[in-house]
Image 1: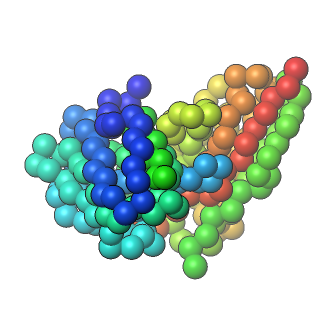
Image 2: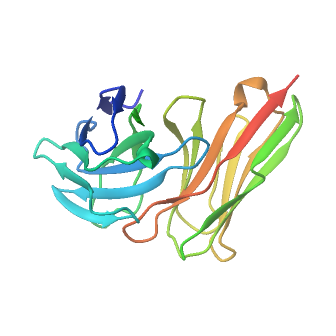
Length: 116
Length: 109
């Protein structure tokens, strides 16, 4: 067990709705990343937050947004849900240190989102 | 385009046999990761490889990295059923993380 928690575990939403997913990072971690994993595929990088600022983004539209809080918990918000947004959403936290190349991230259990 | 490929995508192997999974990537990356995922579960970190020629071993799994060839291998020795899972490699160029499509491994008696 990594110490990274996510809520809720499962969620069902209707197309067009908005959803907020939450992640609580492992103690001491200052970086959090979010991933979307469709069934049978590898995780797709959504974005990463470092010290409360977006630090990198994958090929996802602006309706995917995030926040990282001072206590290093994080949220992923998705507006105007589409059927293709149905997936497992994973967050991963890590400790990013200047000059330290060995960045390792620890994944939470994920939130399974179903859009109908 | 940043791309990570894995070969094979599906692997069925008998217990006790050896096999290698290959991970090719198209961009410079100073680190490469291997993860394991069981069905319906999250990702478990297996190895972090940081430099050319790096080799790490844990139990029946050994990972290596050749940054010049942009190739990493995950070698399985004397496979057992408990190794059945999907294995992903991932690279972290700059501020992105790119995962491969995964290799679904099934170890049969």
